[in-house]
Length: 181
Ligand code: 5GP
Ligand code: MG
Image (cartoon, rainbow, N blue to C red; front, side, top):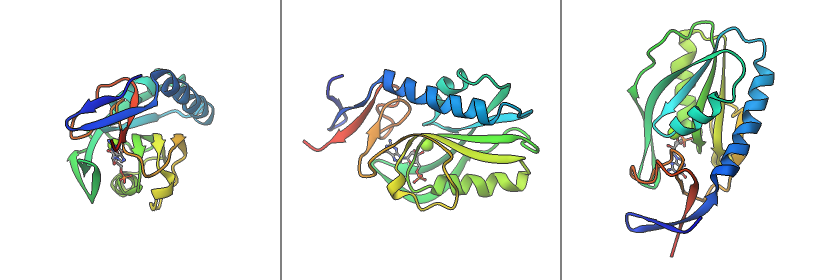
């Protein structure tokens, strides 16, 4: 993996596709064990960023499950605006379902809190969260991140594998970090 340029900024290799794959193997193994008896497992993928993580994770799930999508937005450029808005609401009934929210990265946890507040009144049986990357040091949310892939340093900005820098870099198969030079 080489350094890449997106817009005017440079990004250095951080996680290879192979490392991402083995991280997702470990998450899937935990979910397959914990939800082995679930009758109504629903993965709720947070667009746009979680689309690759979702596609790769659900194919490793052996428990019967369904997948649905929701779109919220909080980020512009390199930092969160701290204000979340619903861009595409839920399109299915989640009553009685075991919902697992899939996000590609959790930072403050405000998006996750917003989603819990949105989902809880719809009476799911349970709600848990899985994220590929977790900036645990910046988390100030009210809800536990039960299935994190990699706990990462919080002062890094990453792109690739669904994560964008102003819509650039989202389709890369590996993950890169912003480098200052
Ligand atoms: P939170 O609400 O947990 O603070 O932020 C969650 C959202 O912020 C993620 O779904 C993602 O869209 C965005 N985000 C947080 N950190 C990064 C990062 O390092 N790179 C990119 N591209 N997005 C990030
Ligand atoms: Mg996201």
